[in-house]
Length: 395
Image (cartoon, rainbow, N blue to C red):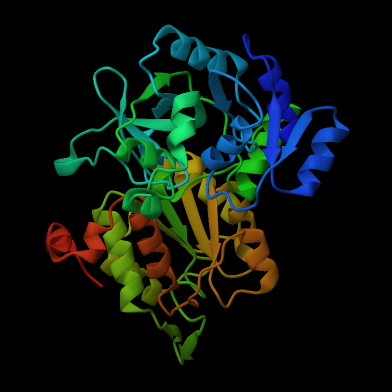
């Protein structure tokens, strides 16, 4: 990954020195092995900019560009644009990059958002969705790309700047500069490939670099359809018979509330069961889920049909299951979750496990995660938000 970043840095026009700064001897060994220049720095630096200040004491330059080692898809032409912008306007203290961000990704804290003044200087950076779309106003978002260019005079003063509460809270070093009054000019570029923030991001980058299709991935903010199993998810798995056949199942009212919360907030719910019974149908009628399928044997085919019926993609779909019958569904949905009491092999196949068991609020746990991840937490956390849904609520 580091080698990819170094190779792209070497392609940037007008750059005199490409140097890897690290506090890890293992990184030094890797960098020197592929023939790049490396510098060991103090392990006590709280940020990459602080590390760059130490580099400045050894390397003389007018402008210092800081690339992150976890951004292997950085484009040389974007960095060249940044450098050229700094050279063209000596009043710019710091330069960085951004690009448009889809609204359904704005709630992801790994995607740092930036808002700009009319002169393209940064007003604020945040892990939260800014601007906040009050009253359902349609907002547009800009994603910050973590590439910086600094004037030497800025770096000379950086370490002496106090760390403001904003930096401590957001864990964003650029907020120290804004709090101190420095001007950060933000240059817009085309959307970039993903950085490596998580193991899922790493797999996406590997696929892109190898020319393979990207692995299926989603975020909670994207979800528009939730597909749930019944026995072992909405119930505790118990099946009770009388002389006339199956007649009783144990459901949890909070799972029912979770279904209604999702439905009333615009996220549709599909209930898919391998069984069928009057009891099950009565419960689903009470909850008014958008879609139901009973007596299903092929859950992958069922999920694909439900996505088509709902007009959503796999990336916009999450499913929750508890046993081997749900494994095919996991393969075709963007996000998959297993209840806590599912077998370990089912949890591994899903990739994500909930903390609660089937029939004991596991679905509600997932519903809350999706609502919070979609920026709709007011529906579950405030009386005012809940009151907007109350007329059609049920358990």
